[in-house]
Length: 240
Image (tube, rainbow, N blue to C red):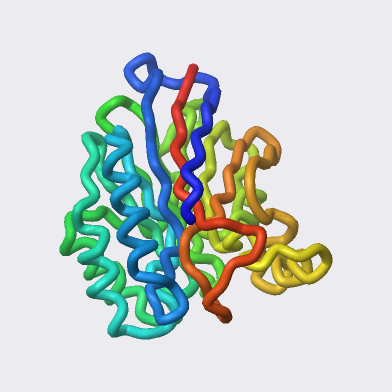
């Protein structure tokens, strides 16, 4: 059962035109035999029903099979939002084929940010970092041209990346951890360290000037189950 969570976020310096802006995050769909197709369809329906201003996708659309790339991109094709639908890649996307995942998403009208930034029509800056596990992250390039004093929404698949730009006034949205997927003390903490996520498992973290939310995501890897860790779609409302 998908848990739909809602969060109010105070972001200092938010442009007046962006006050009350709503965005929805989907992450870690992991289309594969380990993830129910019906669950992924439900997640897209929830995101569409929210009628948010912006939709963001924070990586790992597939696990390791190229034949899953086109189907998951088509599954995401109904997503529409006034400010756009933006995506970044995760480590499993690069493991499978980063170029093919990018191409498939872009065919569906989804903008893939790979160490790039864009200023939305309401004045908010959006930064998308590429994956760090395959050493594609370039923080300097990602923030190039973004005024230092401006609030930013940052998409970073691995939450540990927040430590590399923690001086920025930003809302960072991450995934990667699945909230542990099977949440058991000690074992889950060890797994988080193994995948490079440090202690950032799920929920809210404040690192320097950065606020970060780590979403549990939707799919499964390794085992076709979750335990004490429901799939999640997250919605955020920005406030000045």
